[in-house]
Image 1 (tube, rainbow, N blue to C red):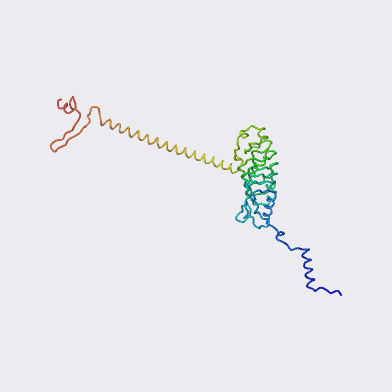
Image 2 (cartoon, rainbow, N blue to C red):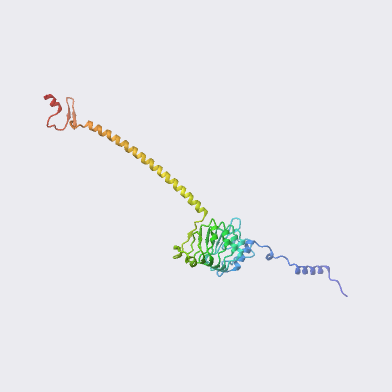
Length: 311
């Protein structure tokens, strides 16, 4: 005869059956910090022989304690810096999800592939240094959208294609180095370090096509133009002030010189009247109670008084 199992046994059976069909959410299935996800994508695209990124944890809530990461006071990732760490692989396009980035320093590594065009979606980026790597392909035109960019180094890679004239649209750019690549085409009318680009240097004649790398400031910055304009105004003002002071000093000098000459002439005339050629200079005198003597130089022909008495 069949007997029904107890009710609690049935409930327990259905509970486990439900769990098998609908497992409880684990920590891994919870939504992660988007900055953590972006950094983990970057880590997955790179080979890290020295383990400098080994402490990057995909289950972490706050990446600000990770090495090579800089955060702002409100715990937003603003800097990614891992220079000279022998990193290889490719740079993930997920870097564009770090929308608060101000600085990317990945120079002196072995990172290859193309420069992610998504870098142009970082509105706050001020410094981008990908120099001395193995990047290839074109320089993304989207970099011209980085209106806050001030410092750009892409030198010593294998970049090709035309010289990116669109970079002239970055009004804040003050430093640009594209030397030692395979860029080609005509050279736009702004200055950058382009030494080591033979396809450019063969088509034009400039001194910068030989010798060592010289990093050169870019003169199309608006801030630089305004600074030059202000410096010019200051130089003109200083020149006018200096000229005015010089004229005042010259006038005072001439006035003093004329006064001195007039005073000297009066003294000279007075001296001429006091020392006449027919009058003798008083050498000394002697005064006693009984007599007073005046001492003059010897007069061979006698004195005026003796001449008057004789006559």
